[in-house]
Length: 583
Image (cartoon, rainbow, N blue to C red):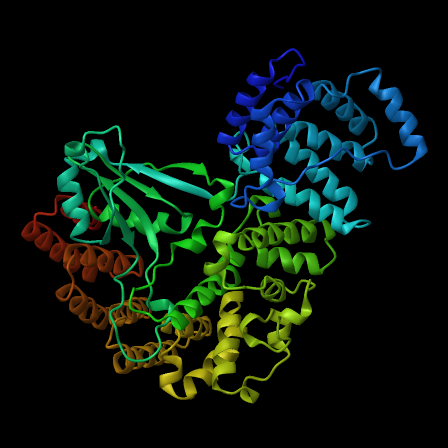
């Protein structure tokens, strides 16, 4: 452990504190500055640093409150503690940590000793070990003092993002350096021809000669920004930031603010023949909720629409996407799974889940977050996860848009009006049970098509296709795909036509109709900007489903297209596929 000794000069402790804060260890920073003030009560720099930390509203509250040692639970433990301290100077955090570690080891049921050990370790910057001690506190207290267990794990949520606890962190940014992968200007041109890039103001360094400020900065968006149109702007029309692109004649780098952009970015770079290895770093606490902030709105939307879309974005992120992410802090479970386990009596897991939600609630309460979160009540998320509500009056008890599984199972889809049915369907889809989702999807499809056109059609029809295939009814599955394509054509101008055609071709290949599958694949190839790669995917699908001769024709077509376009990587891939067929 790193010792913080009395003989250190206050000025050195102040600098050490700033070093901890730079490494996202606010508790360790606080301890250094407190130590400096203890040595020199007039240490102005330390006092100002403490004041700045306590008022740093960009941090969640749990990162800037003052934590204090707990006292022994009873007289017997007090005597044992006095004996265990053995004259140690508990103002020396290393000595205090050793004393509390021994007490916690000698009595594994002593939650107070374990919590004090966690605080010592956190103040020393030993975040990973502190989290281990807090885990013991949660297990010891969740059944008897639930709020205390939640508070302990809120601290763990703060500590896991700091340096030294990278293996326990939950949220990361990723960086990709492509500078050595080719000429930066050509790489940028290749990316710009395929990706949706939006130029941002270049960073200005006053120390750099203006004539050399040649770095361009772009946001890489998930889709184009929608243009003005009649009717309500839908959330699924809006782009999200996948990455920030930094380019000049010397460098080409990407910064991914959220894990959600990693897979699509790597897939796009692969299409360009690039295979980079991203590096990752835990997100700072101030941008722990970066994934919520990646949404982008067009300038032309009115204020009312902007507020609605921001609120819908937060609801979608937490209630549909966040709940399905596995988290280290939940023993590798998703919040959705953890909520189900917790409802079965696992109070420790429920305390951890409640703590995770509470810290994100603190992020939403920051002054800078008010506009984006639009007053989002996190009891909607608790309701979705079937957890007790903190402020029941803040959430409509019959709001289908954030219902849990048991809530949805208790209602009849036929009794709901169109909009309530659509909300119930979205809730069911987020929970990932196809049978439950189908209960709401089927009556939704049977009603006015204009209503379901407002919902992501893939989300509606995918579970219906899967259920049809599960009972070996390919005719029903094809009928659902055709219905999806029809609605997309009539109401979305066929924007998802390729998706549904691909579904159809894959299903035909799977159900022993290879000729028809090839016909559909051929139409996809003819209408693609990357025909060689579409042909490769089609050939692989047919081969996987036992149709080697049909796969051969598509592999040969892929080679022809790759040669025509000069795509050497696609050509090698297709030749390898053809070679495998000949082996």
